[in-house]
Length: 282
Image: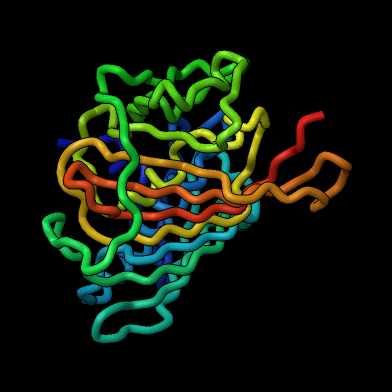
């Protein structure tokens, strides 16, 4: 069975050494702009394909980090993958996503290896999952946003804790945290690669601080810890710091977010760290 996420991150050899062709999906987007976690997952898929083509055994993402140079439009792209090191336990690669005209979109570094199974308990874990209402008591975010379409919500089912949705009613809670169950709309099983997407799938947690507007990702890193157990993921996104004074204009700012992802067994299976641009309220 073919799933839409697999089609959206599919890569094919370009014929050049380390070269892979792909097509950026128009539906993994927010307001017409490609989602950063999705583009990073596409780069990870190209790196994994390169490891596999070279006969390597490290075909699962352990750590993926990307700096976003420009917003990638939907359509054909080229991914250049450069293996940097192959060790006994992991391989390190660099991946660059660019347009067919050479315009750079993403510079990524990846550490790939072999992940433990979903039933492997952590030896030490001080990040317990938050308390969440059952899915039937949560609110699914729609495709239609406030004046724009969030087509990503046609690919993902995000069922949010109503306690973190004050911003949708014009009454943000002021905590700077969002919590949601996340799964694929076409019932695709979650796996290691989908955790890269899940770590950047929620709206900006600054919405619960009353700070709305576009928040483009500048840098995103995702640590993948284990294969997730079957079922929906539990995702919590929190704002740690909003820093004023960066960029042009008196309202320019950056935000520092952490996104933790748990599987149905309660294991912390991934964590995303993001730096994004934003604007302070007038």
